[in-house]
Image 1 (cartoon, chains in turn red, cyan):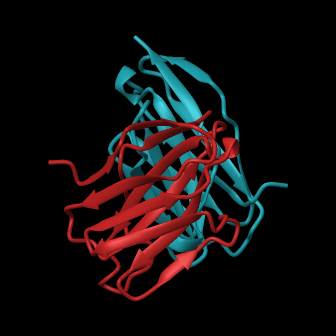
Image 2 (cartoon, rainbow over the protein chains, first blue to last red):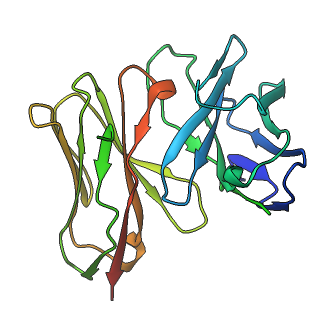
Length: 116
Length: 111
């Protein structure tokens, strides 16, 4: 059973299009995240979300928006795609209900987005 | 200066070698230090987690944190071809929301 699964694995699209990446976790975690990994392998957090609050990295353009239909899902919607959006996007989750900080992050396998 | 510096390698070693991976950082307020392993076309997975300074050992892996020097290390003993992956250091002040990752070091262990 895959703990954190995201689809699609690969996404090739034209500039200006709108696309979504889906993420689901079956770990019962209460917090989910979206990360972006660029061509130089730098991983940067984009969003974190639990049922209480959405925390947005201030560097993320507002063309990116997370949508959470329920606790187990956090989808990423991207409007008006640009060439610079090409990267690998990772979904992750953690269990923060115990109140401890830095609970282990579980990552999905990534979605490789190529904007042409 | 980047907050977290990590030599991207690549690093190639023979099977059985001791591997040393390192990161330096600039923010002395970091408290949590992690090492993630990322296989090709996979997401990162947590290998080691350390709070504040000191050493932590788990099997063939040892993580060291020297806060006075702002330097963290991961040692892999008796390296195996299955250890071939990219190793990312990560650190944070409070929680996962402010975590900063290094660029990752690509390691190849040759049989």
